[in-house]
Length: 305
Picture 1 (cartoon, rainbow, N blue to C red):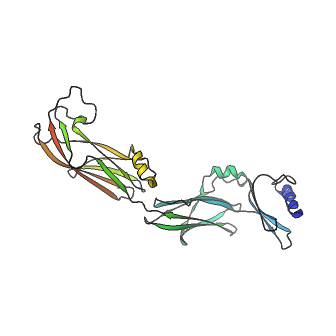
Picture 2 (tube, rainbow, N blue to C red):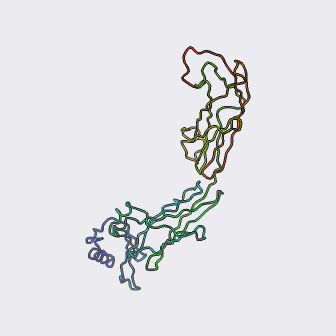
Picture 3 (cartoon, rainbow, N blue to C red):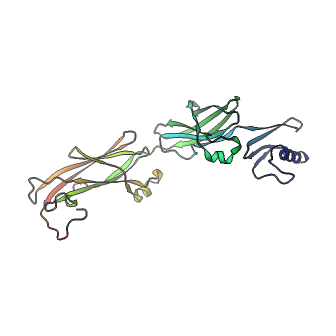
């Protein structure tokens, strides 16, 4: 115990980490089995203490330190994995190598702005201690380990590892409207209004993200839309996707049936093609009938047909 108290006094005189017996500054302390201080974390960094066989303090030094922040260890559902973290080392960074399940992937880019780290460890004077590396994962269920090997300019290496599972979630969706075989009225008295239009609506979930929603009428491209509608029902049913905005609603001008006479009908087909960011397509088809109507409305049209 006397030796440990002596170490605390030594720390007070040399680094300002303690200011006398029983008054060590708050921080993370680690001791070996003999009660000797081996590690302390402060605004100066991670300070390590080494001893000889007799317990005499040999040296105090600040080693490089940091953190591998992503992957977080939680399940990954997006094939694009952005490996991110930070590292501080007073000797400078020579390289940061990235491995996936033991296979070398490449060198991470070092120098991302990290003001949060600078504010915590200002004595390093490093505003850009972040690193990143992008990995494209196959879309299949698997377990992975990411290993990051940081080598400083003195040749010392610091290793960080994180394990995670990839959970493959297929693209899923539904074309809600029109329903199959429905009859939609074309109100002859109100051309170019909502009484001669049909809303094509549905939803789509895809971990890769949605690039476009294209609408075709009788196999002829009409227009494109995007996901703009909040669907809490879909989010509740598919919680793993954790996506609130999954719906689309696209207005489609209807063609008048036949020669335009009241009562005439015509069969049509609407097709919706949803493309994700990788170009993968999901296609939905509905058949419906347009029927001309000569109905008169006392109140002018203002809503949906």
